[in-house]
Image 1 (tube, rainbow, N blue to C red):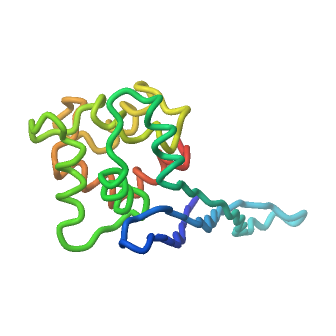
Image 2 (image 1 turned 30 degrees about the horizontal axis):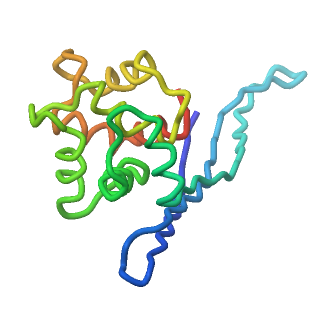
Length: 169
């Protein structure tokens, strides 16, 4: 099964240039191959495509309200900096380094599960430490259950960050 995404990002700013709302629109296409056998014994490969669209948006005020109920939540502007590469699955310039440094709150050179948890529950309230650990294990090359920069980059580029936010296992 192949899964493809198209993500559209819309950033709304106030008169001072401050981000006040983020909108993401997702177009997801799943292609699955199925085999069918005819009455004369011939096997045929079929491709089936399924599409769905959905969106995610958050305003600065909504974020502040949700973050006030979270332990150790990131400030909104830091959240925006981390969210962009995380949800888009790519980055430009030093975007990824900035996102990594924001999440690495104890400056250990690794993102620990509790640091990742300060960011993700804002967008996916159902995510828990066990699920986060399972996602981290997909890129955890040194098996320490944390992410160094290269592992974090792999998480972003493989679209796992978006999968976490969109609740795909």
